Length: 453
Image (cartoon, rainbow, N blue to C red; front, side, top):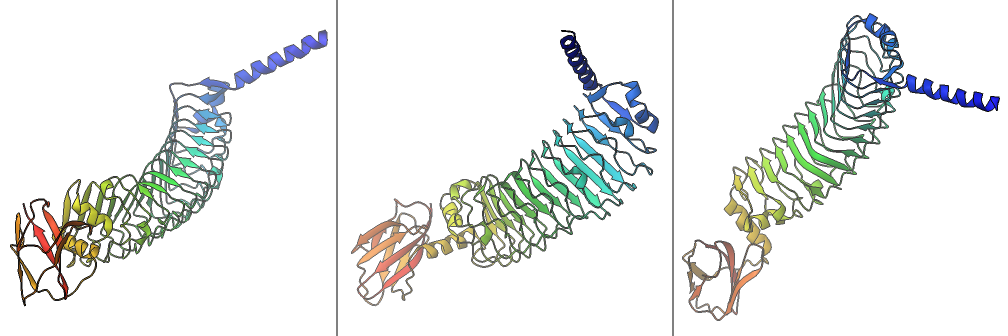
């Protein structure tokens, strides 16, 4: 009986001890500005291991973080803004496993060469903001336990030996935006487990990054791909991507193709491609069946054709802008032709090459594309053209018309009559561009017919 009582008391004391060690504290946050404050933390706040508020470290005379060795979780944000010339690693944060708020790390001209001390960190509920410059950091290997970021991933580095994101191999999801800026990265290698990004993917002035290699596991991006002023040559690395919130590419003078997007089937927002002069093909977009916004091509002087867009549902396009593409002559792909027949939004087509220099030119090319090719000399005159309700037919060289057929821009017959009179009534046809075809015993002829209001 005494042994049993002693055992129960031992268990009770152990539970009390555990409860004391795992105590929550500091709901109003804490700021460390000196080494003395860090050294005195466990004395000033005994058994404080789960800080409920924010933690900020901004001291510039720090030597180590050993005084924080009991810290296991932070309920708010963690801000590390110290530029100490004597702090060489983050040892002391080894027990930290989760940060419910933001992780904001700013590191300039510091002797820190690694992130030792963050090896146990598995979860960041808010944003991951990492900024470094003029340092000797070579990798992120100490972040290899991090699996999830609830907010944005913001990474900016320059003048460091860091060239990739190796060390983030356990990261599977980013809740919001993925944003890269700075000039140090030449590869996204290290993100091989990342499957989803909830917001935009933005590359800003990434002059050393040639493609998206490293993101092969990524299947969905909730926001847009935004690439401005980069050295990307294509979009290799996105081979598993099936859904995307939008595609916004601008000022990428080296971008020659959209290779890498071949598995993409749905874009829920706009496609905007601006000032990408090396881009000469849209064929990688041929599996896209719907979008949910604008379709814009502006100042892409290497683009000659819109082939690759033909499978997009025209009713999913809410406006169309094709302007200032000096060499773009072929715009009569099915999605564009169908949209021009029944536009649900605005249309702006001008300052492109002949054949795609106005809506009427594209309409004409669409009509010719849809109708079987017939190229016989015409012995038939029609007037007025553009026509109102009545069209007059006049034959040359004793030609006798046996049948007249009118096709719309989709190639569908909308009017046909055998042995017609010298006039036909067009009042049932809507305003637009049509092809009128005449059949006689010896030949067929075809002409463009415009019906005005």
